[in-house]
Amino acid sequence: TRTLMKKMGINALYRKPNLSQANQAHRKYPYLLKGLAIQRSNQVWCTDITYIPMAKGFVYLCAVIDWHSRKVLAHRVSISMEVDFCISALNEAIEKYG
Image: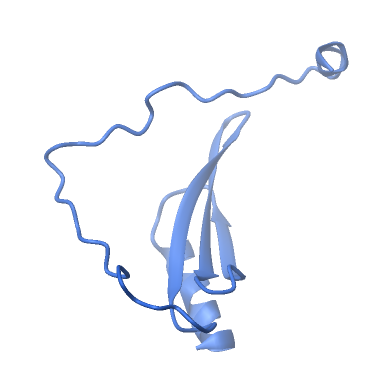
C-alpha cells in the first residue's frame, strides 16, 4: 500500500495526540436526556460537527441526526466554521421531518 501511495504522490494524514483536552475554565452542562426514554423517531434530534483533514486544511461536516433511528436527517459541508452551514442543515431537517 505504501509503495502504491508513494507512486501516486499521496500521504496518509494522522491525528496528533491530545487534541481534545478539557479546558477547566469552560462551564460543564448537565446531560439533559438522562432518564428520558427515547422510544420513537423524531422524539430527539442531535447535531454533530466534525472536521475532515484534507491536504491543504480541513473541511467541516455538520449533521442533524435522529437519536432513536440514528438516521442522518440532513447534513452540510463547509470550508469554514461559520454558523450558516449548520443552520442550513437544521432548517432542511425541520422542513423534511419537523
